Length: 130
Image (cartoon, rainbow, N blue to C red; front, side, top):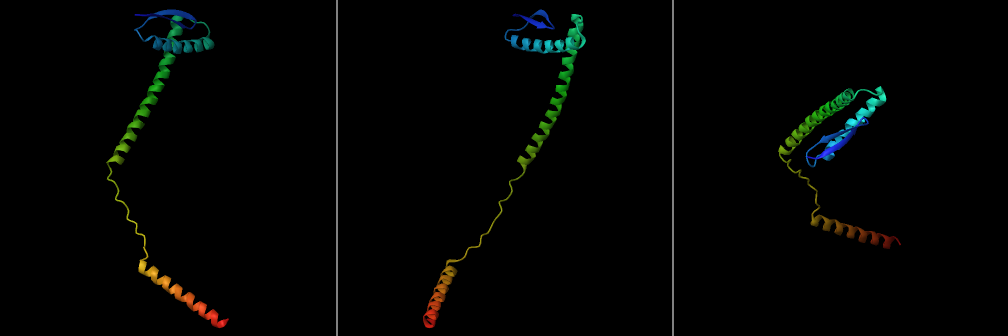
């Protein structure tokens, strides 16, 4: 079991931890040291036990606030998952049928023939007028 040396509030402590957990211990000690430094700036020097107690309580307060936020976020996630499940269980809507009018080829041919006759008549009228 490794022994890790940590520093909190300017004081050094030797703490044992499980193999591979040294990083977590250093992180936790850094958080506690940050709170202890904040206390020292505000209050000044105080007994070690009181400083550690106050720093621990400040971290516990922050942790409680974060746990509340996690609970709210978990409730919101559960609500959203419920909405997703409802949407996924809905039947697929029937496709809309859209009709596009199509002009039959016979009508197009007839219109082209009428246009050709009209042009021929226009040419005849111009020839007689000119």
